[in-house]
Structures are given as structure tokens and as C-alpha cells.
Length: 176
Image (cartoon, rainbow, N blue to C red; front, side, top):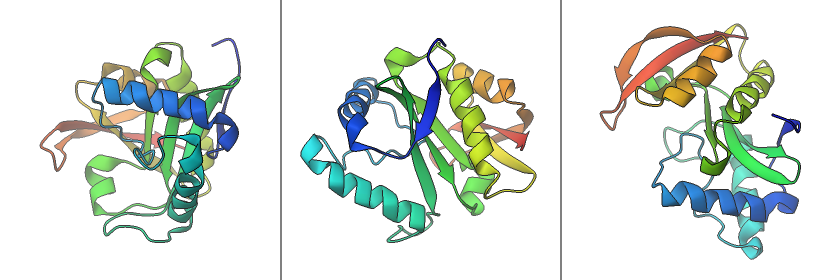
């Protein structure tokens, strides 16, 4: 990774780059753990609706049943959004089993460049505001890249569990 990665709140300055990444996720039909508000905005003119929704999520306003307050960050390198990270501000029963406290995704064309490892490292620093000692991180059993990112950030494997979609998830604790 040559340029420095930073985590930022959604920002209109990077909205077109973010939308480009969303199109890549959709092409590979990827359901992304880091809930980025997919479909809330498809052009710059919709950004204010998206941003209002993300601000509400961060403040715990108008959350769907079973959801917890969370902060969505865009991972930016230079002037490009390379991924996103969703930091859940508290846990619930589902997150404590198979969801984890942080979800993240790297734009497909930006993978294998070290961004995931750095993104999670920065996310763990932010998690200290909400969690004391450790956080739970999960990934699909077949997601080798995500497992490597978790392990590079100190993830200790706990066990496997099936999520509500019957997908086998690997569970890890990471000390913060």
C-alpha cells in the first residue's frame, strides 16, 4: 500500500467513487457485511438522503427491529473509495453469534493491496470507544481473504457457527 488509507464518514466529495465501488459489488452479486446503505443513492442527487440515513444509524434513530446503532466509514486512499467498514456501537444476540461487531468490504478491483488489513486496524482503534477488551469479528468460512485480514489484526479463532442464512461463519476474538 503506497498511499495512506483513512476512514472517513460518508462525504459528498467521494460519492461518485463510492458509487463506482457499489457497482462492482453488484456485478459480483456480493452481499456485503458492511451495510453500506446499498440502493439508498444511485446518483449524486440522492447523496443527502443516504447521508441522512447513515447519520440516523449512527445516532440510533429509525433503526429496524434487531439493528443496533452503527457507524459506516468509507475507506479512502487518495481520492478513491476502496472499501467500507461498519462499526456496530453495541452488540445484540445475533451479532454476538454470527454477525460480529465490525463488518467490512473491499471494492473488488482494490483487493489484495493490503487495504483490508489497514482498514480493520483503523476500525479496531475506533472500536475502543464502544468496547473495552475485545471484539468479535466473523467471516464466511470460504472467505480466505477476510480470514487473513482478521488474523493479521490479531484475530484468535473461537469456533464455527451457522448464520440465519445457513452459511458457515468463522468467529474470532480480537483484543483491543
